[in-house]
Length: 318
Image 1 (cartoon, one colour):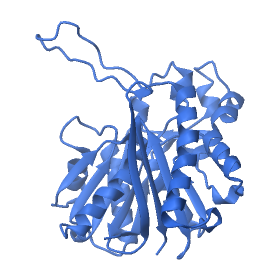
Image 2: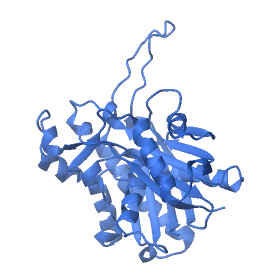
Image 3: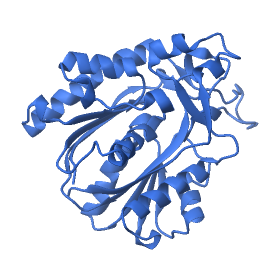
Image 4: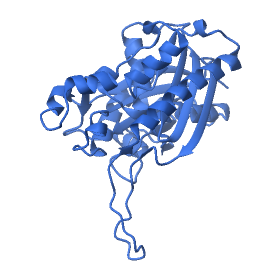
């Protein structure tokens, strides 16, 4: 069974941080950051929790779908980590917005939205759900070493949500893992267990930037070619390439290799930074809001993240 997206929403912190503000306490500059990443601004939580942002996005998505909260029968939340180790962020959101249904988290890093779509498809196919709320939410500002200019300038906080139901929009989906836990990771630490001799503190996000860049560029090109071959459609039939907003240079490199026009590769990384799994659904929200995304458009979506996970899909927007 296929599916379609019938409502979208977003939740963004109030505090915006420009590159120039980062330069106040880091050895960096707007020119250094923007030329290497395409990022000019990002938003970070101050008084907000990730549950706060997620609940705002969820309620907006349900309202945009012309449904009531009581119509939602499953919540899937993609996140690297919520406000607690346990309970899950999905359970916290369900409590906040007053929904009593199955709710659980997944962690596929930046590919989490596509992984969520695949899981939702399975629930719809088995008739275990009719209206599924996928929420992608990240509070990466708490995972950064704010003295490391190579990583902390890249990420932001935020949430985006989609309501999924039965439909014929999804034409292709593919998930994969190129197993590598060292390229991007956040060490968990060992706590104070008396049974572990080599104790380790939890750490900040670590990333091999150049290796991630090479992986992303090669992976995106391969994913696009595989999707086109599977669907037996030409490249020009894709109206939009909605890619994970990890680095504008990655997106530009992919576009150049494919020989496609810039307007087919929408971006919002300049305003939000890398929002991990929330980046694609947030971009969909903005494209719907400003009228770029229309019924009948064919959209290729792809993301890559720690693991290294990859998820790609093709929608014909309904």
